[in-house]
Image (cartoon, rainbow, N blue to C red; front, top):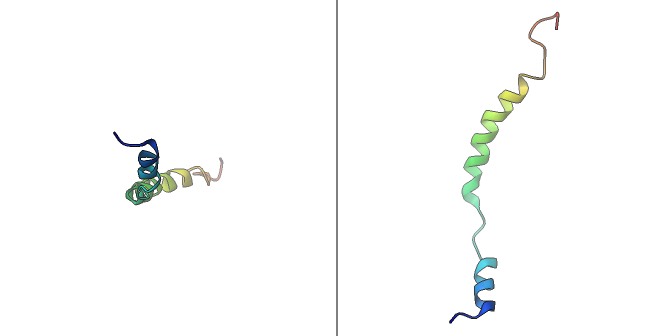
Length: 46
């Protein structure tokens, strides 16, 4: 049986989630152009 301290040590020694960087880049490429459409009016009358 594994001691409780050994299981907790494995969790704290986990690798950082660098795989999410690609998700952040893709999400930013989608969100930034979408948000920029709200920045300026489409016509002078707006």
